[in-house]
Image 1 (cartoon, one colour):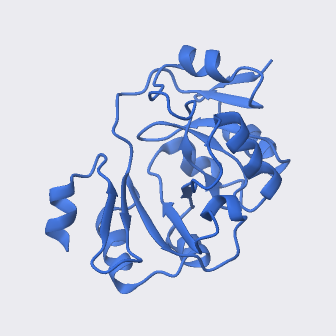
Image 2: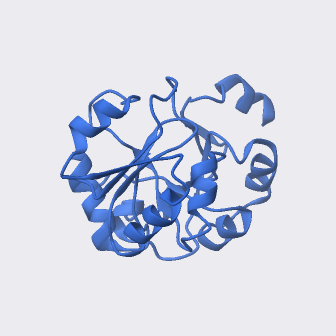
Length: 204
């Protein structure tokens, strides 16, 4: 059975980090949805995320990073990206940029592009005190299914499939993060999430 720990447990970030650092897959809360978290630099861990979610290979997985410094370590941050980061991150905005380091092919679908954001959720901030690598942040649901906001739905879907679930209760319904591809000219809004299309278009 999968271990479940309350987010309010002060040891929860350290326990989750230990799982991740040992190759495990963890479900954790963000300001939008619950995420499936694993070490994004480990091909074995990333493959586990795909299998757990039933996600088709060839469909990239977005990442979370600690801060702008880690952002610049993993992606080529353009001037345009820097402005968006200063304006909207941490928060529900994911930027698609050219990768700066070699990620497992499953992360990028061998495109050389990586989707990255910085989360503003308190648990994620604490988690990054204990991990030094980017974190996978695909939503914790079965591929093709609806978003799961309550912990019972999460547990029913992923019990015995993941190593740990961080229980943050029922999250508010969310559209997820807005995804903007900055490798194209003009930039392309791949998905409209919590930050409106109008706001992004107005920014550009």
